[in-house]
Image (cartoon, rainbow, N blue to C red; front, side, top):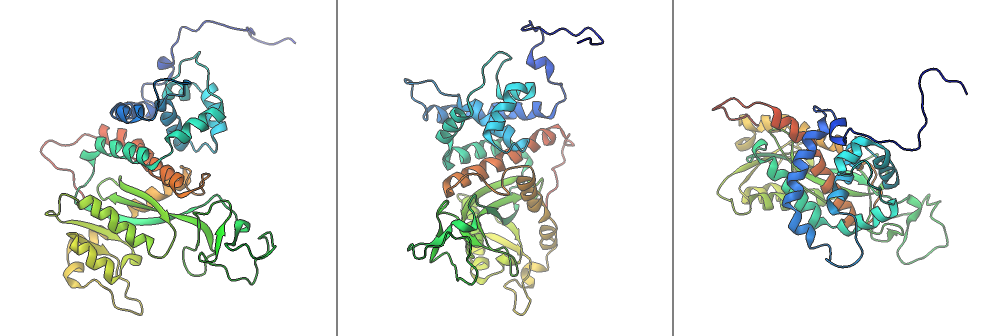
Length: 366
């Protein structure tokens, strides 16, 4: 077929341009890759323990973690599609660390090697090392805590009686009384039937919890629990206790919504040397906060910074893979949530590092 221009179809060719030259110098992923390499270097000894010196060669854990970061950054829905894009996308090849001629792994092999890394200890270690790089951009005095629902990879049909009564396939449960005490999902037993508020539909979900610092909105702590009415406050106390461990002499503040306005929570956080800046829940009841706390200017500032944690949750669900997870089991969902929080901080770090800080002036925070 006649074609305009000098088009030549060749079976092979030589390229004298490296991947490093093909990626623009001002590309946002350059800064992310630089920080990621520092974090992975600090994790080298921990990753060595997961792999034996002998046996069948596997995918390097650095490749897997960089590839999983790309999956979060670019909202890639499956690992099959992720491996496919790494094969033909030069930017992805450069970020992962592959050369032009390196063969890309089979998606099943990639998933098998990923499962070897799927434990909360590795995720928390990676998350801690990212925060170590961001420590000078994080407030160590003022925080906000909140939780969000994470929809499980299980349908309502799978929520059936634990004792096996009934021959129904679960598709018609109209008029039946179902609860987490008597029913469980057959596909994801760790998921719990839970609803966000009155008037909303119940779904099989997990609860993701985060503690955000109030200066730049970076996530300081994260974890996932079963969904129930007490998990929000109990997990918040656990994260605050870890934050205050070894430094009880210094008081910090924590902002939260009305769901945290309970007598036990307020009393316990005060025992941890934490000042509760919680929205007052005084509708048809009396709030557990009095003028000793609410009269101060810092109380209003903390409440005005609560949008930072909602912004983080929005990114995790809109860009990340946390609106509905495709992993099953509490341990795997916790790994994905903590790793996605690390990716959220990692993506923001290059911009924060590029901002000039006036000499002799400490950055302001709430």
